[in-house]
Image (tube, rainbow, N blue to C red; front, side, top):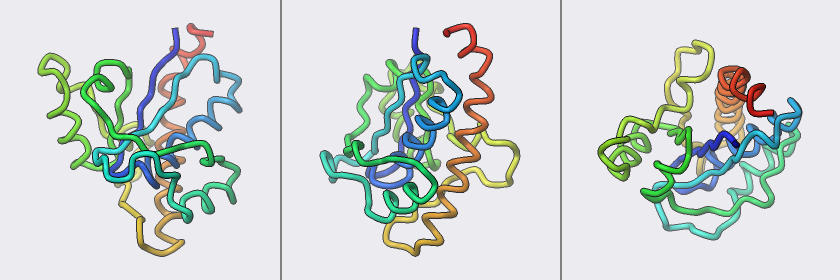
Length: 161
């Protein structure tokens, strides 16, 4: 049974697609792709169907991550129940997901960076409309979070494989 991970940001244009692409690459490199179902979504439905932000695609590609197939979608209440790990890029996303969630599982969504080794940062800042360096900083944090998440789930993955 696959471990289901959902990365959530505002519009599903940069942070959550980068996290989806990075985590997908990490699990593939670990030989565990079959053990995961990975997706991303946004709390806003404004850009549903749109590709990832060009700077996000570019910065990710330089590091070997492919975001080309990812299209924006909006997170829905059913996602909170369905995904084992609905993960928020910042506290506004966490609040939104907890409001969407059925009351019995309102605490299921977690902060994405809570899985990173202690780095003194709890949120991945939104780089949309900012500089290339802001996208690279976001990607640095996303890589740290994805590494920590995979490390945390490795015992579960080994059982699932």
